[in-house]
Length: 273
Image (cartoon, rainbow, N blue to C red; front, side):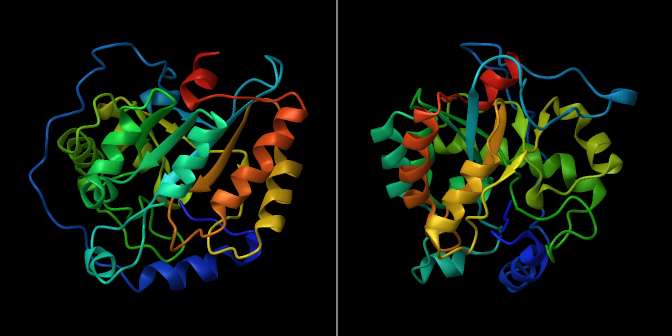
């Protein structure tokens, strides 16, 4: 998911940034569904009306001052050449900052990102401070009009999500969560129905950080601080090339939110509370 500080310009900037690397998703055999956790049963929401994939936006406003920082590790299926040329879709400095600050977080990772950075994916996935969730394999849209992203065909949506879980397993992530974030945050009834057999909870957010393509860390920090409420889910990014200010934002907002009495939690804790 990519969002901007000025939401009104999000579609234009995102479309320009992502359309250039767009192509149809690479076909692949459908892998097996993600195996249940061997160590725990992560909380999920019950299916929505008509048995559709449930959607979680934020936690309870009444159960304490908790907030979940979530980070989208975006990489589209055909950006390998850009990575080979030196573009950084990872952000190890950000992960180091979260560890230094002891901030639990949920990383919504694309399968393509895990393939490009398997050591980092494995390190994040095996660190109890974090949890890895699914952001699709390809980072292509699940609706027809989503910030200029190319679209996953309806009959490939389930396979795209399952292929991401397979990429996580191959990278050595032991326990990816049954949570899914739609690329661009775009979904409709057809997409929710397509993912019902996978058994995931779709996770949105109620605070847009605006870190994508931003150069003013102060403005992004201010937007987060102004938006957070008890139970909030904040969307940020773990991609140096597309979100270069995020580490600075985290180092700014974490102590300020703690000073206000907020406690940082993973998405699983918000869903389970």
